Length: 143
Image 1: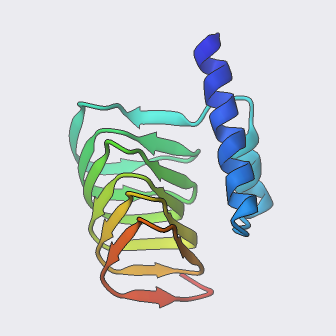
Image 2: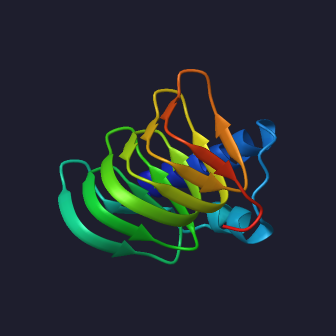
C-alpha cells in the first residue's frame, strides 16, 4: 500500500510541476495522470526489449527498448531508461535517454539530465535547464 501512495504522490507532483511550468495537457491527459491507478511501469530497470511497443494509458519505461513505440497517451522515460526507437505518442516526458525520431501530438518535455538525440515533431516543446536535445524540431499544430 505504501508504494501505491508514493506512486499517487508522484503523479500528482508531476501534474503540479507541469502546471507550474506553464505546460497544459488536454483534460483527458491530466485526468490520466491524476487517476488513482498509478502510471504503469511497462519496462522495469534492467529489462531489455526489442520490437514494437503499443499502449493506451500512461506508461513509464525504466529499462531499455529498441524498435518502435506507438500510443496516443503519455510516455514517461525514466531516469535509467535508454530508448533507441521511433516514437509516436500523445505526450512525452524525458528523464532518461532517447535516440530516435519523435512525434508527439501534444508535448515533448525534456527534464534536467534528460537526453533526446533525434528529430522532434510536436505541438509544444519544453526543455529544462540541464536537459539535452540534439536534432531538428518542427512545431506543428497537427502531428
